[in-house]
Length: 158
Image (cartoon, rainbow, N blue to C red; front, side, top):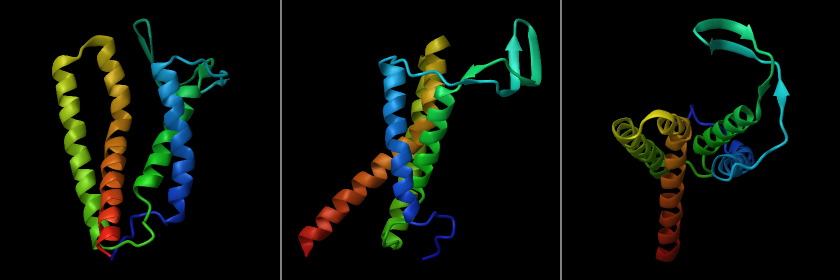
């Protein structure tokens, strides 16, 4: 089985270690508006809009980095979990991974299309933020649920 684009199996644990706290923090920040200790640093901004002026490649005064750190940690963790080899990487796993990714892509873009048609203004901005994460979330949910139930079925068949 040619799996040259997958990470080694050991990366899956690292991914879970990054993903679970990041997901918890995302939920706390967004749904419960929990205040975390601020991490503020001067940052390089590729593009900024101020009043009617656009600036490129500018060091901004200070930016609160909590949301950037949490989002990046979530994405890195989810990618490591999603695209690390299983202990036994066979044709079933490859097919399941491919089908789950295709299924997640269809669902993600169907939700995005519905959002484009029926959600507006600031609420749409929230949808776009969550859309950064939903493809990986849907993929991980479907992949691991089917993997769990297929392992359960094969265990009972023995």
